[in-house]
Length: 194
Image 1 (spheres, helix red, strand yellow):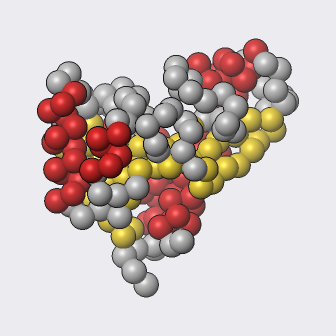
Image 2 (cartoon, one colour):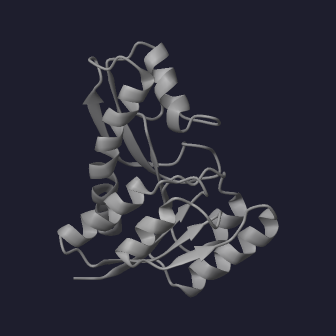
């Protein structure tokens, strides 16, 4: 069976629960996927503790100088010969330069059923507030390929969940997060094996 190398990109505020779910998904099923490194954008990111506990290398680079960040990211990913890059709480938009030159597909997990409740500004609790205000009884999570438009890339995995008993956006968020944790690893594995 072929083995795969992936990296995870995350912003400085990420708690890292989707990252840890990815690691656990591959390790528990003994799948030949190595997470080569996690790139964070803030030195004190909460995800650092999870990376250390799971023995995954961490690299830091600020996004304050975006051109420098892009150059560093492209170089790091290309030299690592990655099969895939997984975004997990990375809040910046991927530019055409990154997408074209990074050398591997990029995936993202979104906490709603795209194409609804996606686009600029639709992340985290903003998504769950919009779903709650729309009165939806079903929500879910979507894994998609990243292109230069927020949340518009090809869907590679999606799962819905009943939220009819949820009384607040935060309850929707907690319910959807459970789906995210089971969906991301499966969708990435299926995509790698297409």
